[in-house]
Length: 483
Ligand code: FAD
Image (cartoon, rainbow, N blue to C red; front, top):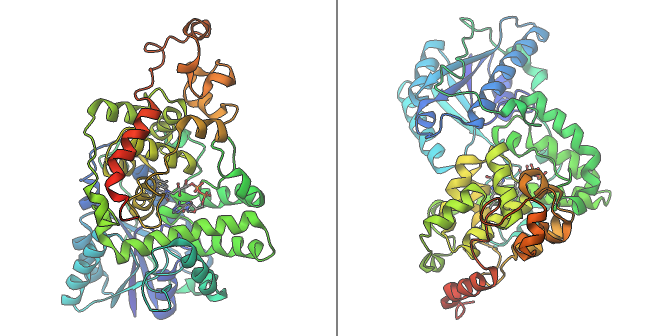
C-alpha cells in the first residue's frame, strides 16, 4: 500500500501527525511540498522573508528525510518538491505515484479550507482518498466547548477548560522514527527550485538573529528553556530577551506545538509561574484558531457586528507616517522600524502600535491587520486578526473601547532606559532617558545640543495624544448604551 503526505505549514518530520499516521497505516510513504503558485503569485512583494524561510526549511527537511531514511534502511528517501498550483500538482503526483491516499495536517484558514475541499474532490474523482489530522493546534476547533456545547468567546473560562483537556495524550509526541522504515525511496532525485526560480529575491533573513528551519527551531527552544521561569516578568520588555521568538517556527511547523506544551506543562505543574504564563500564550494561540473556525466572518468584519458602525478616518498622511515609523512617538516608531527591518515585532509593541493606529490615528484596524500580514514573518491569520480586534476593541474578549494606551507611558514602563528605542531610532540614541520617550517635551535648544531638530532629524508628533483620545471616545461613544 502507498500513501502521499502533503506537507504545507508543518515543515518537519519529527512529531508530525499526518506523517506518523501514514507511516503506521501504509507500507510505502512519500512526502511532498508544493511551492503553490496560487499563493506565491498573489504576493505583491518579491522580497519576502517568509518565502526564503520556507525555502531554507524545505532544503533542511529534504536532508533530514534523507538521513532518516538512511538510518531506517531506506536509502533514497527524501522530499518531493513541486512548483505549481497545489490542486493540480497534488492530484497529478498522487496518480503518478499510484497512492491510495493523500494525508495532510489540517489547516484552518478559510482559503486553505476551500483549497483542501477542492483537492479532496479531485482526488476522490481519481479514486484516491484524502484524510486530515490535527497537528497545528493542541486542541481543535470543537474540542473545547462550554457545558451547553457552544464555542467560548471569553478567554479565561476557555483556558480553564483547555487546561483540563490538555492531558498526557494531547501533549504526547508522535514517535515518527519508530515507523520510518515505511518511508519510500524517491522515484527520481529531488529537484528543489532556487529562490530565484520561484521568482523571489534574497532578503536579509540570513543576517538576522533568527536560526531557521527545524534545526534552528530546536536551537531557539534550547536558548529559551532556561529563560522560561522568568517569562512572566520579562515578557513585556522589548529591550530584553524575555520571549521565545518561536512564533515563525510555529507558523511554518518547523517545531511541534506538542513538544512545547509538554515542556511548559512539566514545569507549570510544579508551580513555575513563568511556565504557566507561557502555556497560557499557547492557549491564546488555540483560542484564536478556534474563533476563526467558528466565526469566519472575523476575516473581514468585526467579531461584534455593532463595532462595524465605527466611522474610521482615511488620514493618508497619518497612515504613511505609521507605516514608515515616523509618528514622532519613539516607541511606536522603533516598533514599526523593527518590523520593517526584521519581520518581527515584540508582543507588547504589537499592542502599542495597533492601539496607536486605531485609537490615536483613528484608522481602521483592517488596514493595520493587512500591513502586518504583509510584513510579519510569523503572520498567522487567526492570531493576527485576534490581536488587532483585541487592540481595536472590536473583537471577542477585547480591550474595552474606553481603555486607550498612552504611547508615552507605555514607553516609560516597558522600555524604561530607552534601550529598544535607541537601537531602532538611532537619531535619538544620545538623548537623556528623561526625554527619550517623548523628545517633543524637551526644550528645542537643548534637543539641538544632541543633534536633533524636530521636524528635520526626527518628526514632530503627528497627533496630540490627549486630543486624539478625546476624539476616539467620541468615535466609540454611540456604543456606550450597549455596554
Ligand atoms: P512568546 O511570548 O514566546 O509566546 C510563545 C508562543 O505563544 C508564540 O510563538 C505564539 O505562537 C503564541 N502566542 C503568544 N502570544 C500570543 C497571542 N497574543 N495570541 C496568539 N498566540 C500567541 N502572533 C502570531 O503568531 N502571528 C501573528 O500574525 C500575530 N499578530 C499579532 C498582531 C497583534 C496586533 C497582536 C497584539 C499580537 C499578534 N500576535 C501574533 C501574537 C504575539 O504578538 C506573537 O505570537 C508573539 O509576539 C510572538 O513572539 P514569540 O514567539 O517570542 O512569543
